Image (cartoon, rainbow over all chains, first blue to last red; front, side, top):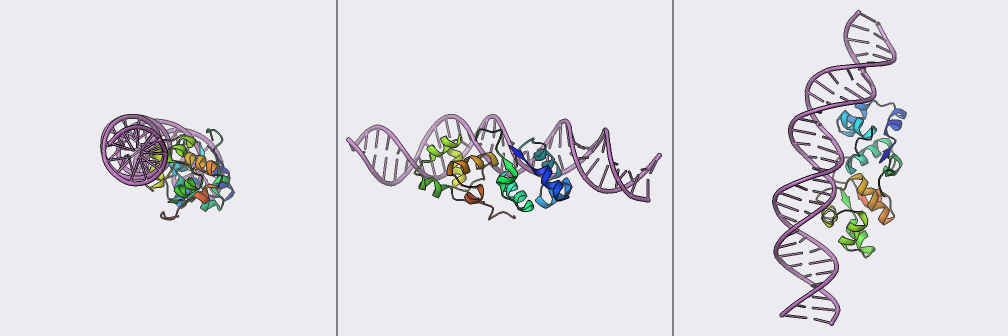
Length: 67
Length: 67
DNA sequence: ACCCTATGTAAAACATACTTTACACTTCGT
DNA sequence: ACGAAGTGTAAAGTATGTTTTACATAGGGT
């Protein structure tokens, strides 16, 4: 699963901590997702989508996985 | 998190087992999601979206949660 | 009555997502 | 030179998602 988190975050001028706070998760979670360590849960994906004002599909893409 | 899984599945005339097979998960997983026991992972949400030919946002909605 | 399909429930085990803490490194401002 | 802000890594612990197995019930077909 790929994502544009880092780019979008940069575009909005948010620090990892700032984004984490807005999304109600820890900074570690943001780092892990940006680094591709794991995928966010669906609820978190929705939150991030709403923060960036874009559909989930524009932020994340299956890519790697089988679908 | 609400979802229209059961409805969409019915519309396509798929059994829980058939949908599970297509999505590469167990029938239990489909049941649990339909019954709202828990939310799917993001990768699974993408698979289901692709099976039903609709964006994730049309199948799932945050509703309950805080976002 | 019997079998088969579909749906539901439950519990144990395992995998993934998330938190908290603590530490390292870089860059920028003073 | 110092401190602060931003980013990165790591490990232990908790929470959530998923699998497997096993069993219960209802409806349809023969």
